[in-house]
Each structure stands twice: as C-alpha cells, then as structure tokens.
Image (cartoon, rainbow, N blue to C red; front, side, top):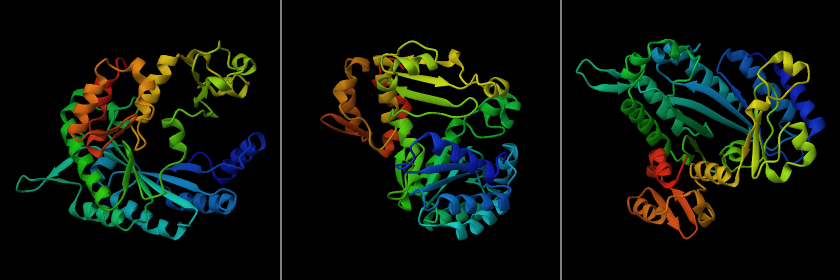
Length: 350
C-alpha cells in the first residue's frame, strides 16, 4: 500500500478541518489482502483512531477469486491458502462498529474433471467459500463479473483469446459462475441490495448510496470525480470550477497530473459534464433501478422513457422481473440479472 496509517490519518484530519464531519455515517477503506501484517496494522490503527468518533468503519478487501490459476493470470499477489490464512486471522479484528466487505469477481474460469464434468475452483475452495459465507463473519459481499479494462494484466493477452475463454471464461461461463456464487450468498441470508452487492440486514454500504441516489459528493486527490447538484452551483462555485451554469448538475474531475495538482491547478476542465434535466433523469433512472429501492415518482421520468413503457413494465412484472406499484418500480433478483436488457428497452436513449 502506498499510504500508511500516518498518511491516511493526516488526510482524514485535513478533511475534518475543512468539512463538518459530525454527522458522518461511515468511513470506508478499500485494501488488497496483502501484505497481511501491514493490512492488519492499518485496520487496528484506524479502529483505534476513529472507532469511537464515527458510528461505522467499513473495510472492503479485494479477494477476487479462490482459484490459484485465476489469481496468477490476474496478477494478484495471493493464493487460495494465503487468502484462507488472511480471512482466519482477520476474525480477531472484528468489532461492533466495523463492517467487513469482500470483493469477488466471476471470471468464468471453470475446471474440468477427469470425467469431463465442469467444476468451479477446487472442491475445497468452493467448500471454504460456502462455509465462510454461512458463518456470517462477512457483513457484505461485492460480486462483479469480469470486465476487460485497459492496462490490466489480462489486457496484455491476445484479445481474441480472451473472448474465446482461453484465459478466462466466455460470457455464458462468467454468468454461470456469478449465478452459482450469488445463490450461495442468497441461501445464506444475504440480501441483494444492488446489482453487484449483497449484505446482511443493516450492513449495506452507506457511501455507495450517495452515488446511486444522485446525491452530491466531492472527490479529493488525483483524477478523482465529483458531482454537484444544481442547487449547490452558486456563481462563486461555478467560477472556481471554470464552467457555466448547468441545468441540473455538474460532473467534474481533478487533474491526472501530479505536477499540476501540486502547483494548485487541481481541476481538469475538459472533463466537465454539464447535466441537462434530461441527462439527470436518464442517470437517476439508470442508477436507481440498479438498487433494491428502485424508482419512485415514476411519472417524473416519462420524458426519457419509451412511449409504451407502461406496457413493457406490465410485461416485465408478469415475467417476475420487477414489482410495479403505482409510482414505484423495483427489480426482483431475476430482474437484476437482466438489468441491461430492461433498462435499454425502457429508456428512449442511454
């Protein structure tokens, strides 16, 4: 980790000096599960420093997979046995005010038995995952499907080989893995509160709700993103952001250049995105439908929905993809699985 405990505390203290944090509901940190002792020292130090100041500290750990071959292909510095050791030793650090989240990715890399039957990971790895989930030590899980981002280790592989499943799985295999892991989470009592997120009662991510519900937020640091609702865009703020007034809100980013940032040129005005009323409605519908709270005030979104959206909603409800009650629409688990199809067919443009 590039930042140690001292630097993290200095950053948080600096924020506390410039912002009112008395009603802060959650401090959230994301770590890799290695080096193990370094991570444990960070967790202990942050708990000691802020455990009594804020009601919740959320730690999210990037596990990704229990398959050794997948971990190696993805450039991870961990192994299944190393992750088992990490998770067992982490138990001693659990506190009432601490939430532990674990990130996994469905890579779709299925193995094959001598009889030709496909199986995920190894029997011992899948058994450990099931036992770990059923223990409820984890407060929540994030379960993603593989996406091939630029500059990651697997992007250096041949693109056609990647798509063919030579390294990781095909789309169908990725979905099969996602479905299997999802069923284990649901059977153990975790609630799916967003497309990729599952939690025990009262343990869902607080800070992520900010993004999904179109609330304003500030990003501090290189290349960080921010969003301000129109009501916060005073003339003074607009001048500072080097932009004209936006109708419904403004998305902006900080510079990626360390030299510019240290010189006080924090912003990257070329990334400014002024949201019109239509833009805002599209984003609010797209993001809101991803969650277990769904869409309220449905009629408000009519300007960006297809003309026959009510007919489509009725059909989706009959198929079990959503629950539609007057002005409220919430996707079921089955509906979340086909979110991309539903939202594309409902929005006039996206």
